[in-house]
Image 1: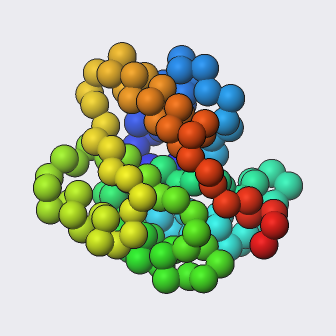
Image 2 (image 1 turned 180 degrees about the vertical axis):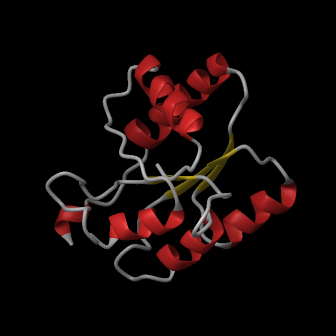
Length: 140
């Protein structure tokens, strides 16, 4: 998950725990860190930072925003297969359209209510972690 807001990261992690998700979450605080994580730039290494099956991405971050990350990831042959779910406070229609145009797999507006966030994460887990077939990055 790439999100610059520590409260949003904490609430999302709590929502994953509350929804009984068994999938581990790894956090970065901005788009630059996300790209470093994906490219294994130190301190990110394969032993402690496994390659993601999918990315939760905030749009508005310092250093490199989510839109720039979408462009870079989707234009990189080694990374473009990773589903990217935009998870942001924005619900502006132009942000939704632009995110999909840039290659997002899904767009979710973060609710302000924690119980609604937990509900969304349960649905998210059911769909993205149980129903969808994701590529096995180890077979590449």
